[in-house]
Image 1 (cartoon, rainbow, N blue to C red):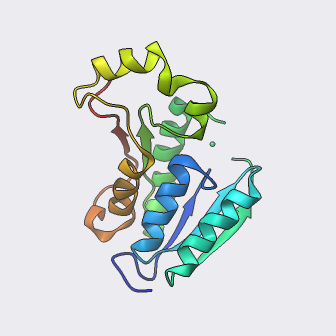
Image 2 (image 1 turned 135 degrees about the vertical axis):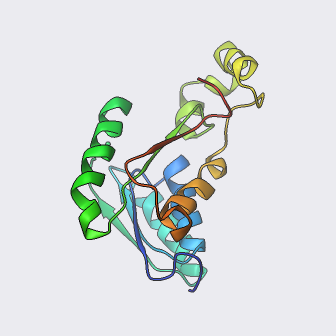
Length: 161
């Protein structure tokens, strides 16, 4: 499969469902070979791999329990790893999504809650995000379009802070 990310390898943590799965699919659509990481949902990871490979892409599911880390720890890890890997021409960036409608938010009852209503009222774009709102940013970070960006965290939250 050719595309903007042809010849690149992307490792997506938590890629068996929700935001991670959407990011993995977007990266695969852009031509990257995708490592679909999962902690416990092998079937979900296998489905994401199948979706990517059915379109002619390359993907592999790998189990590893990685990033229950806090967002502050992820930010620090991103900066540290980017400094360490920069001389090897490896860029490291992170995405910090706001409230995104996923299986997890449904399990917690958030989509039908007053909490969601409050967040949407405080979000300049007036809604919570969808997993597919995050994927294009991951493609940007993985592409040469962001070739001068490393060690950064992009907040994608519809303007909510």
